[in-house]
Image 1 (spheres, rainbow, N blue to C red):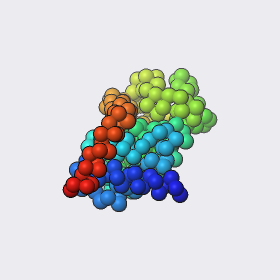
Image 2: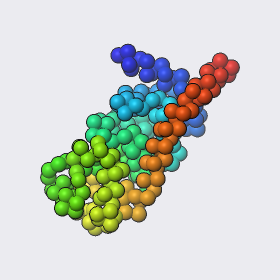
Image 3: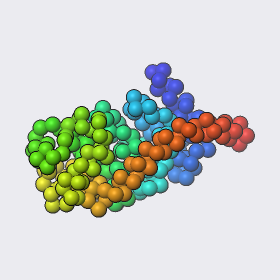
Image 4: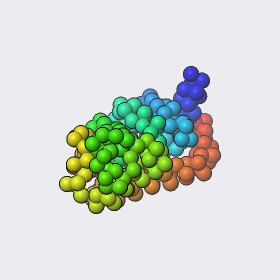
Amino acid sequence: FFLKQKTAYEISACLVGSEMCIRDRSTMTEAVDVLTASVNAFKEQGLTANQASDILFKTVKNGVTTVQELQQNMGKATGLAQFGVTFEEINAAVAQMTKLRTPTSEAFTKVVAVVKTLAAESGPAAKKLKALGVETGVSALQSKGLSGVLAEVQQKTGGSAAVIGTLTRRFEAVDGMLKLMGPNFKNFSRLSIFNRNMHSRSVLHSHSKNLNIWFLFFYS
C-alpha cells in the first residue's frame, strides 16, 4: 500500500506540464493510472515514473495509439515482467503493431501471445523452434530479452512469413510475430534500442526534469 501511494504521488508530480499529458490531451487520472500500473509491475527492473512517462509518450508518438488506450490495456502485459520481458520491449512492440494498423487492444493481446509462445519449453512451437536452433523458455527470455530471442528467430527463419506461420497454430502469436519480424524486424529493433537508450537518458536527466516540474507547479 505504501509503495502504491508513494508511486502515485511521484507520478502525479512528474506529470505536471509533461509532454505525455499535453501532447495527447489525456486526463491526469488516465496518465497516473497507466504509470502506476507500469511502475508497480516493472519496479524490479528499476523502472521509474519519469522513465515510464518518457517511454509511453514515445509509444504514442511512434505508434497509432493514445494514453487512454494504453491505460485501458497495459494490464494485459504487466504480467510479462516475470518472464524477463522489459517495459521498453513491450512498448516497442505495441508501437510497431499499432503503426501497422493493429488496434491497441489487439496489439497487447498479440504481444502476450508471442511471449507465451517463446516462453514455452515444450509443445509444438518449442519443438519447431529448437529444431531451427532457437533456444526457448523463460530462461532464454530472461537472459536475452524478447528482442534477443526474436532476433534469433529472425535469423534462423530468414524472416520468412511461410516458416514463421508454421511455428504455432495460435493466430495471435503468428500474427504478432509477423508484425515484429520479417521486413518489420528492423523497425521493431530500432524502437527497442531507442526505448532502452531513453531509459538510460531518463536517469541522467531526472534531476533537471524534476526542477522544471516544480517550477511549473509553483509558477503556472
